Image 1 (cartoon, rainbow, N blue to C red):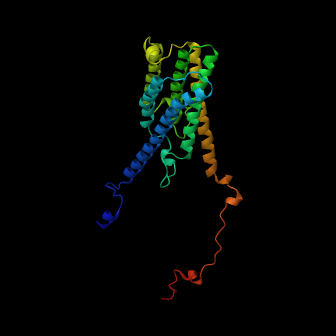
Image 2: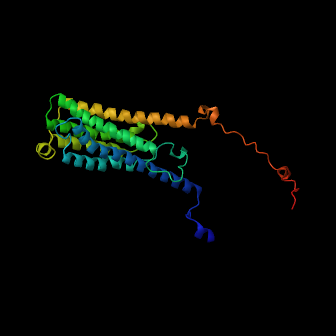
Image 3: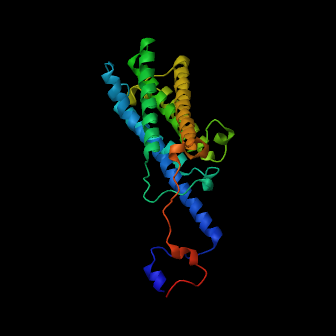
Length: 276
C-alpha cells in the first residue's frame, strides 16, 4: 500500500505480454501524431505562402483565391490528415530504441521534413502558375492549375509521410491502410468535380476547366514532390545508420580506460578480511 501511494504509475496488469502490447500502441500513437503534423503543417503553410511568394515574384493576381485556400485547407485536413491518424504500426517499430525522457513531438528532423515539404509544395504550386501563364492560359485556368497542383502535391506528401523510416516506393504503399487509397480517390474526384462543374468552378472558385497539358503538369509536380520527400528520408536514414555504426567511429571518439588506482582494501572483498 505504501508503494502504491508513493508511485506515479500503477500497473493493473503486470503480464509481460500486456506491457509489450501497451508500449507498442504508445509508439504507434506517437508516430501517427508526428505523421499528421508532417502532412497538415506543410499543406497549411503552402496555402498562404503560395499566394505570398506568387505576388512577390511578380504575379499580377494571387495564384489562389480566398475560397480556394479555405477549400484546400478543409478537404486536405479531412481526407489526408485522417489517413495518417489511423496508420497501422510500421514494421520494426519495436526494434527502435526507447525515446529519451522529454523528447519533443516536433524534433529537428521532423521540423526539417516540414520545411522541405513546405518549400517543395510552394515551389511546385507557384512554378505551375508561371508555367501555364507562359503557355498563354487565362487567370482562371492558372488558378485551376495552382489548386490542383497543390492538392495533388499534398497527396504526394501524404504518401511519403505514411512511412517514417521505410521507403514509399514499395508494395507496402498499397497495403496495410485501405483508408489511404479511399481518401486519395475521394480527393481526386472532388478536384475533378469542382474543376469541371459549370457555375461551381467559375462563380464560386474563380477557376476554369483544365486541358490535358495542364493535368500533365499536375502529375509531373506530384511525382516531383514524392521524390523529393523520399530523397530526404533516404539521406536521413543513411546519416542515422552511420551515426550508430561502430566501424565509423574515429579513434578520437574512443573512451580512454580509467587508470585511477583502487584502494588496497578492494583486494580483500569476499575474503572476510575487512576490518570492522
